Amino acid sequence: MVDELETYKTKRDPQKTPEPFSAKSLDKNKLFFVIQEHHATRLHFDFRLQIGNVMPSWAIPKGVQNDSTVKRLAMKTEDHPLDYRKFSGIIPEGEYGAGEVTIWDEGTYVPEVEIAKGVRKKIEAVKEGEKVMLEGIKKGEVKFYLFGKKVKGSFALVKTKGFPPGKTNAWLLIKHK
Ligand code: MN
Image 1 (cartoon, rainbow, N blue to C red):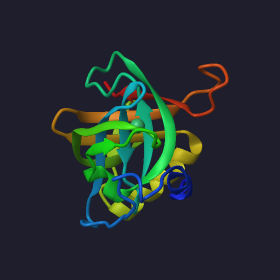
Image 2: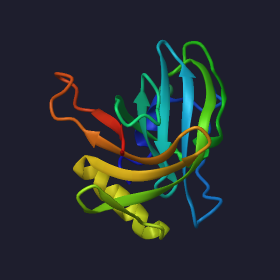
Image 3: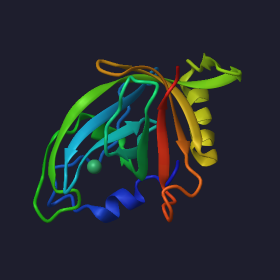
């Protein structure tokens, strides 16, 4: 996986935070996503896409929109365990990410590939889709269709090159037209 859960575990003490550490896949035929509203030092929205038992994650200060004319800055953060998609609660004062977490939207997603300019194909088979997602994250570009309650449609996450200056974990979330 991308960085598995090593970074996640080193940042958190299971004795001190209610956040989940387990990762059980309940439905092997679907891939899930979640967007969590996180009232940390700065409000942001954590966008997580399941690959296997982990959820590669991005912190999006302005959240996810269905509007294809805006690009959202999305900072890549550490992989989270799959069970995190069900988490809402309070991370205690003094702990990493202290503040309230609520689920802003959730649902399933289907990875996509571009088969011709502007034309996308859904990869419905989970194993193949996960492979496409993993390769895409390594390359710095993933495409997917979100089936959420608030967000719906084709999106892409694209790693930026040298923007903002000095940031190596900056991606852009773009809604496909
Ligand atoms: Mn967060």
